[in-house]
Image (tube, rainbow, N blue to C red; front, side):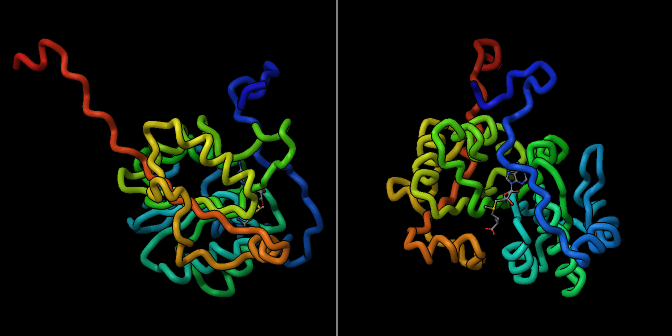
Length: 245
Ligand SMILES: C[S@@+](CC[C@H](N)C(=O)[O-])C[C@H]1O[C@@H](n2cnc3c(N)ncnc32)[C@H](O)[C@@H]1O
């Protein structure tokens, strides 16, 4: 099966890169989802207008699969001059993040509780300065590799949303996922791996150690970082009539 589900009602929907498991939700997470959601959530439908959502114009960054928001909080605290969207499907994680945002009085983060593919469709082109995918679900079984988030169709959806100088940062502790990122991106002419032949980028300074990285390190795994950029758009082909002008 391709990256797209083939059942009729889901035709053209990307395969889910996540499992929707509610897990245990604490009383304070449930309260945050009820009381703080209206404060921090992006609008439920329609095109997203970042300046209206944040009440200002600032470089916009997106973390995909923010988990319980550990890294998002660190990024937002370190960069008050940027705005951030935390996209996550796991509701307890979102509840945890909402409580921390409220406690720390951060106003430069909005949350999106759903599949990031749906969010991308609602974001304006050229709106994102940075996109972060830290420790994506590894989907280790070969038959599940198609469920990995980083895929050519996903990159094709993401690319127009990035500014020309925008960056996509990916980090993983799973060697097979790192190889997968290389396999997927190497043939793409419209993406550049900024590490060139070295393939792996230096660790992004702002990326703090989250529980997923701690687990990888405890189990003696190497951490792989990528920094990808959208390649410049090709110059429009000259037609005979345009070159005569
Ligand atoms: C292994 S966790 C990593 C969490 C966090 N980045 C960290 O390093 O602590 C991956 C997260 O990505 C989320 N995720 C996967 N696919 C997603 C998608 N299409 N849209 C939004 N979130 C997604 C999952 O729900 C999961 O919480």
